[in-house]
Amino acid sequence: MTRLPQDSSASEHFQQLAEQLGGIARLFGDRGWTPATSSNFSVRLGSDRCAVTISGRDKTRLTAADLMVVDLAGNPDGDYGAARPSAEAGLHLALYRRDPAIGAVLHTHAPNSVLTTRLQPEADSIRLAGYELLKAFAGITTHDTAVEVPVIANRQAIDELAREADRRLDATAGVCWAYLIRDHGVYAWGADLAATLRHLEALDYLLGIELELARLGGRTGRTWQGGQA
Ligand SMILES: [Zn+2]
Image (cartoon, rainbow, N blue to C red):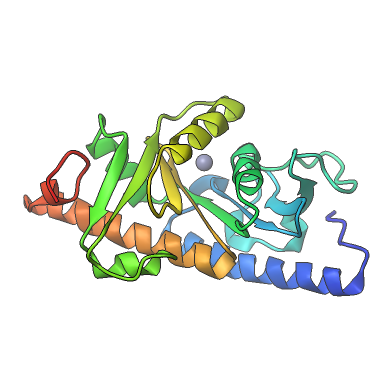
């Protein structure tokens, strides 16, 4: 049972965020981005807490009862019985600790993100250049630019994965609102849920174009990592 914030306006805000997240989760479910209870979502609640999905819940029917409030070290804020945050909550928390401006984090196992890392097994980043839709990423105002999306090796030790993500984000120049985990999926973030959804949709669209280009034998070298812009 999710313990709601005591203050009524905070509780109302929490319910609104939960409903927004539920709508996003249904959208992702319809797209086949969250198979078999995979994927996890979170939204920041003030400077030191966030609401994160409870492990093992069906993301296609997400409600406030499928979220738990934790501090940024992962300690539950309230009594949730045997419920645990998503196994990968540590990756969400690392992003919130990293940047106080991050208001939401969405993780899916969207096929385009997994296919991309399978098709480029040696790439440690994916370069997306020259697309009009790059303007969907906050901070980008022209198609005449490139975005490097880090690709991180998958592992089961989430603390190690979080440290590696931090290291890669430190080393990534320019606008970066997402990273891929090889053979696994995508993490995207933004100032709020709407911006994060926009970032994730734009990235999936662009990865889909790149994959289709590869299938058609097109000039993927223009944008794939190691290619010429
Ligand atoms: Zn995952």
